[in-house]
Length: 300
Image (tube, rainbow, N blue to C red; front, side, top):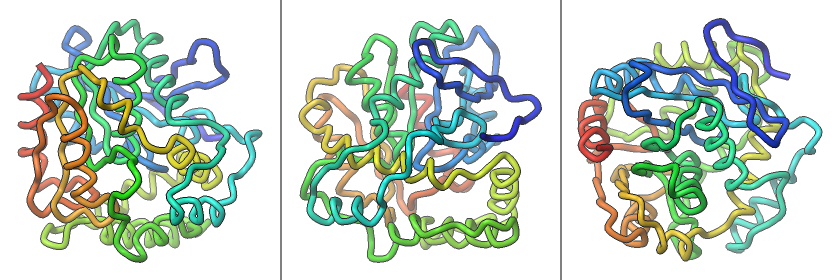
């Protein structure tokens, strides 16, 4: 099980054995903005500076560890999916069975809102977090004031795949020693970042060290990946969304190509699309002002 962390709150999700670790920024009475992280990454990858700047715009910002990540509940008894088999399913545009689904992860997010006595929130998710946000808007539309889907996709068959080698690098085994893990994290971050943006390597190393201390869960990453595959396409369901939606996508995303963001914006009725020049599959401080402006103008 994951280690404890001073200053992080934990909420039990009603009707389950899941506890979600979370942290807030801003004033309690401000409109809540729930930030949902992507595959395998812990909450601190929503940079504290990013969260603070959003809070300064008048939001109660909430970041959290998804199930099977960081200080939230690890589902050790759920088994480990067969990653090579899942990769084969991706290549054949098929879905497979998994210990849980993206809808279950969306239910966790709603359960966190319940535990915090929040009736509804602005929701912003990146990558897998965008998919979870989409599932919230599909299945819990009354809990989502606005949706911002970043670096994400509808999951529809026929969309372009990641650049060669990118997904393989993301899913390769992580070193189990701290120096090796930190170096590996920097390499992956640089691979995912836009080629024209500077990467603050010291910041990434700090996040990686903290991730290592809080606890790594490679089996959990496999289960989250299986949830994405088993959920399959959300395209038909997304056509029914009435929640005001903003789609943010980079023109240099090597993992989820820009066509995936365009497809998301064209599928959700009334969705707005912001294409960010030089943005890859990470958030860099150089682009915080543009992203924060877009989110704050949308989440009203």
